[in-house]
Length: 218
Image 1 (tube, rainbow, N blue to C red):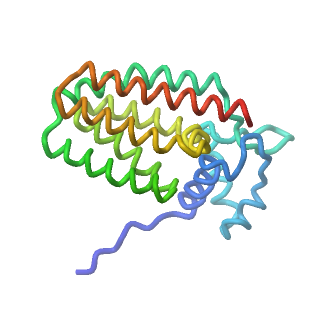
Image 2: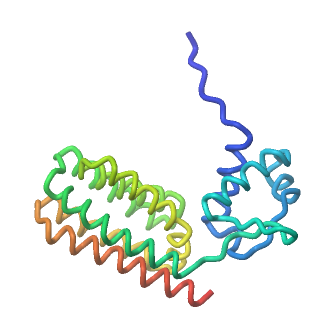
């Protein structure tokens, strides 16, 4: 029997496409939007776009203001700092647990991910780079063996995604990220909790410093 794939709704398609345009900053912070323009650009009807806008407003990616219309939510340094604070607390806990609990197979997957992200950095393939970066952090959480923490970190990474694209505007930052990932893996592989935590703290602090610098220049 032929397997029928799950059908993706037009609402979900509109949501995914608009969200991608926002987090990659193709739609700039503060940029005004109209349902008509988005529907025409995506070649989708107005109703799915309106439904997508409602979801994006809940996500905090757009602001819908009475009598003023729709705008891409501004980038807030206060929001960014709150995300960084939460990542410092939760991701350092995750990496310590990973250093205690990671299996050889999980460490091998991290090393394969590192090889891939190095290649993406050399190719300057930003989409692939960010996808692999998210996979890397998921692998750490998976190795930490705490599902609730995984849910928390997944939400934090979603909130940080637009800042991540902004951060990668610095041409050498992706190379530093690869080096930082390698240091994190070394700490996990050696089972040294303090080394793993130190590497993760430096990784998050580097992201904070670089993204803040890029935001201030904008």
